[in-house]
Length: 206
Image (cartoon, rainbow, N blue to C red; front, side, top):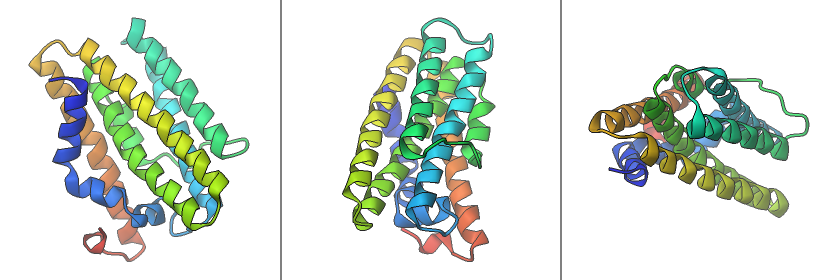
């Protein structure tokens, strides 16, 4: 097992969830039904700042240090930069449920596995954001979000590399996988609950 294999397993194990989290209806859920550029940008900024807040907690804790702690701090700074790149003077308005799940993780394998799950979900969302701005005839914004997607892919790869360094046993990989599953499940549950609250049946969404 290695980090890239785990990413593949998580995607394969949540095929239906990812097919829906990467749909246009996911944008509808993320923006609360307000499919406008301002709301899409705000959703991207909230996602980034929510991640930064969790990573700041982890960096400040005594549970992690060394290379893993440095990675958390660098990814937190990158997340704040992502938020600032899509919204002027960003602030955290709404914390998605998956970040509450992520925040509760404690071990290094679990935290990195949960972080990998987060990046897989966010990459689906950002892919849809690129499509939104293409459809909105805003090529500059679409390019900005393509750049964001590339940055997130590089960050995801850093997480998979860190998993290779941290996971030393089958139990470690099981902890990482379980945490990744939990974060993806939280994202999907949030998606379902949000659509249902707006009178939309998620089973009809692909």
